[in-house]
Image (cartoon, rainbow, N blue to C red; front, side, top):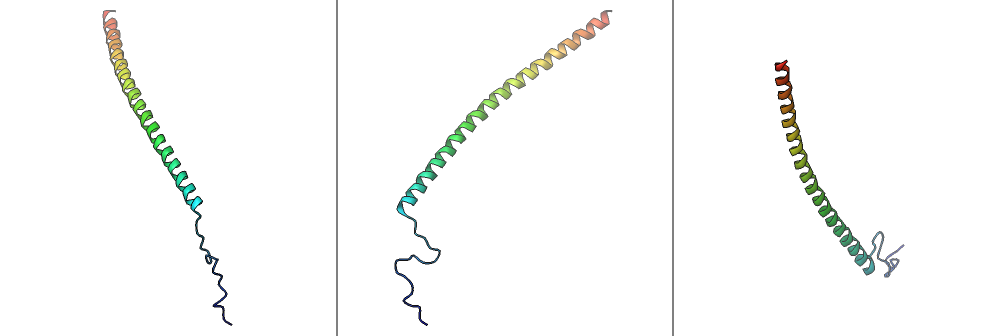
Length: 84
């Protein structure tokens, strides 16, 4: 048996598919869209991180102020206790 003439010339072969030009363009557009979304999300995350840093600095200032006030209250309490 000879199968030399069996292979069809129109067929790309087993497991081989040739992508259509439209598919390549569509895939490229999808990838570009995903990349733009990722970059946008990164910018949003940077903005949120900046806001978090700002809020953390404010919290640190308030904590420091509260510690100072607590120390002042403790000192006043001790002074009032000594007077009695």
